[in-house]
Length: 261
Length: 270
Image (cartoon, rainbow over all chains, first blue to last red; front, side, top):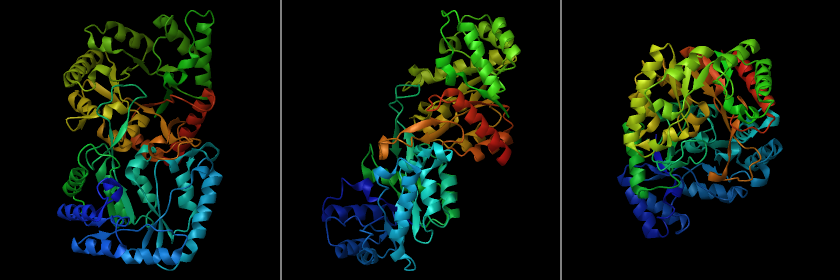
């Protein structure tokens, strides 16, 4: 299964075409198979970005475009050779009630209509915020509403391990819940700040970590991904202490050690 | 598995020993806990009571004292006779080490001392027929030399002398997989702290680090309870203790809801 990198990890390193090429070169040398969406989208024409990807033998997992304009969005995805288009997060003013989540699910279904039967899918990416527990529904999480109420043919979920853990979820359990609807998964480790100075309740900060360097238990997560039909593993690290490329190397080396390929 | 209540949940209701209504007040609180349906409590002798006086009161109410706790200076000391005396009079099987001392953080020498102290105290307590259990928080999952402190404590202490009392919420908050850790601690648990972990539905922060986690009634948050309960049953852990550090509902409603959800899930998944 291909392993890719989410460009957010490299956001300070891809300001111009030369930097994008340098990033591709480094990722290919570390034996990453690709990137989530093209890294060059903002600094060069799509055709140039695609040519660079080809030069370094890298593939793309998905693309971002204005999905309310289906023709243009599908054309953009096709240019990168992908069938999955990323969605925006649920708007802030819909987050505080079950009604908001139901209404957003309805919006997604409306948005999905022109894509139905085309082979294109729209992908929702979670953070911790979607796992709000509503007391009027016995603690049901907003995310469960989005999963249950959206069209399974078109709306898929790119679950993120770090944010599921941060929301109190058992990552493998949720990955299995969206079996067949999770073509891409985000791998991001979760660690506790080693500079923590308070043993009590507050004052303990989590941090992002290279895969295998935090506390998440990866083998059962990987097992769940295989069972759920995941097609791409995407490594992401929002903040790093070391050089970003060094971190990505640590991550892919760890995945290799536990037999992920 | 029998269900107890961790008294930290009720800390604001246990009163002030100088208040003339203090003792009857504690009795009322424990009577309510019993009436809600809890079988036990992890409360050692409250200030102002003799051990026997407190033991007579909980016997009359019909609550079992499951655990007492000890403070770090006691753990680091040589003489455990008063700790043993308290637990023995109360009929509590377990003595809990409530948290890691601050001094251990970032100090491998002190981590070594903690482990030595746990082994020594654990041996003394086991010889007196008691268990000593170490209780974790999230900070236990800070890594030193590539290994979480918690793992170093678990591996460094002798399973014959030292038990572990894991907390589901704090394992999760540490990024640890709850069920994996329960499996790993097989044979070393007398009681587990059950505390749910969820996201504040009304948080006005929508993104990334600003999203607020909450302590939740059991079953009202996101922890994988069916999986956790199955594992606890398989491992034959005798007790769990419901704990909720903060609550949105009135506290007695919160602990009643936790118990109701827990009993229902035990029926459904076990």
